[in-house]
Image (cartoon, rainbow, N blue to C red; front, side):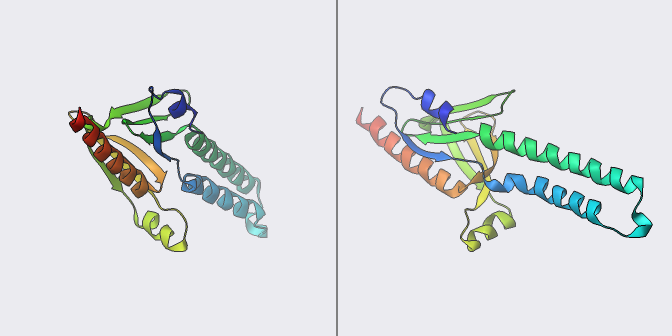
Length: 169
């Protein structure tokens, strides 16, 4: 799942941290699928009509669309911190890449929703959106990343080491 990052490392560049999308990306699709199953399994004679089955089938197709979209996001999103930069890729057909040197990154912010934080109390990995701001650039938002605080911390450590190396030169 981190093939893009490994294939695009510079000479002597080492990976510090790799972030993956959180499994929560599948939840909307599963919720819609569950709704479709409930609609299709209800056996009340009043609503046992063909439109009832058609509506359940349409909702089932919508759930499959959500699940396929989530699967594509899950397998095509890669974010990593190396000792020299932050590198990443998202998108399958339309690909977007991120490669910013630690010296050019102004900030790495994390935005977490209440469920994104609360899930950590269940001893499951938290999730949130990582926002990378380069100097003079457009902010890059990567949503639903597992353990976003660990990603930010890995960047902070790598940026500190990068600054020490730069000062020694």
